[in-house]
Image 1: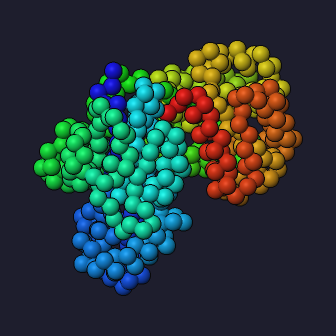
Image 2: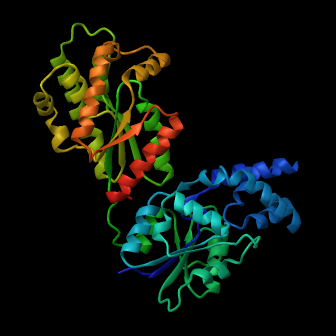
Length: 428
């Protein structure tokens, strides 16, 4: 049973880490005004309270000046700054667990209401919430107690406000409800604790234990990236790692061949420019050996611990390169990769779809090719055809993405598909 059937959260410093965007937009506004930018300690105090209030308190502005500074701040914040944000770890699964157990969830924040809703929607948190309250466009700032009352349902039995500032704690007290001090946030801990919160938590793990004692373990997921040489897998793996981390997921990025010490040693052999006469069967067996070690040492432990594993290539690459392109029997390739099929089948595969010739031009422009990349056009044409065949055979697992677009557009398309698949699979 949940200790509270109504949970109201602050936004900045409680659900999300908005520090970077707020810092940069505050600096932008002050530079436009020709005013000195305060040090990091003072800028940190802009986290949480209404913006105009912070300009008046920490920059000595009048209310009219603070209003103008807020407009300048928004010049950068509206197109860019609001996305310079990160969901704190475990927040997404906490909201999902509370919601599934019947809790009423809301946000009461000093950030403008329309902006707060945009942020919550962008990061996929809005569906868990029953109400959001923040200052309207006509309000420079709003009392936290008044904001809490806007979202507090009638007939509440056990309600709590979770926030990182003394204002959040005092607002809860004004409304006659309990409070939780989020000490991992932006508020000065001494000030927050001096406000006498009902509870205090050091991190989001402790918050989960307090609000949802029987919260289920976080579910992990195994995602692979596949495509012809030069399609941009490494670039997209890095970009998707950043985006998933920004959305609050715990992510492990890895690659094949490699990913652990033994597999990295094998990588040096199979990708060496001088192959020493290596036959296709030896190549396939070496890849399978590296994969078996990688699976046991890295992939399975990470998924079982609740992480999302992003792997640049996996067993599909062996089917494509050593099987279809080298002419080895598919069933034999599958048999030597039995562990990968039985224990480590990917939950989804992002297929970066691109013409092999265009991809190879891109690849050769970046650096010298390795042994496999030197195999010739006909070989790489077969790899492209093989990937297209796997796409037809695995429509449920393969998520095709147009990799010929500019990298940022590829990332947006890939992340949209991936995020939808994670939510579909209950990976929160």
